[in-house]
Length: 144
Image (cartoon, rainbow, N blue to C red; front, side, top):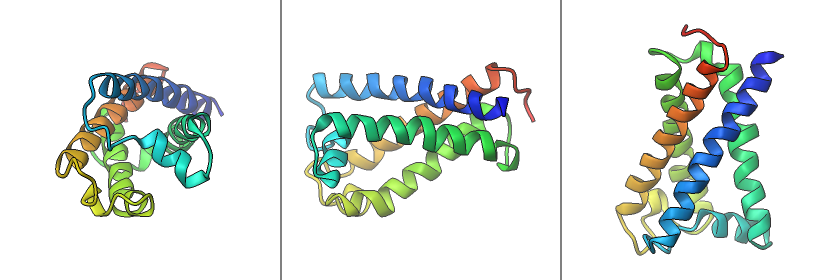
């Protein structure tokens, strides 16, 4: 059970890091059409508070729980690499399923920012995954 709690904690830390990066992106005015919180809120027919809650739940519960349950089964090196692998899988799901569902098209092809959407979101997912795996490993789980 400790591994699940550590997965949730690692998911929380990674989600906070990702959220800060998203806020910085918005403050800099970069890719204003890529507003994941707004897109999530619109899908739920609600406001930004629900969008943020969904974002937090996906990061903490979705990724944190998934990592804690799957990390031993993931191929490759240590926790950082395995976290990145999970982040890339999540990015592919976002680009192939969620982005089209939210009106952005495959790989964000329907968005004005064009190729910057998949590149920026991939970078963010890689950072998220590295933090997720790294924190999980530091919480007492030896490299496998």
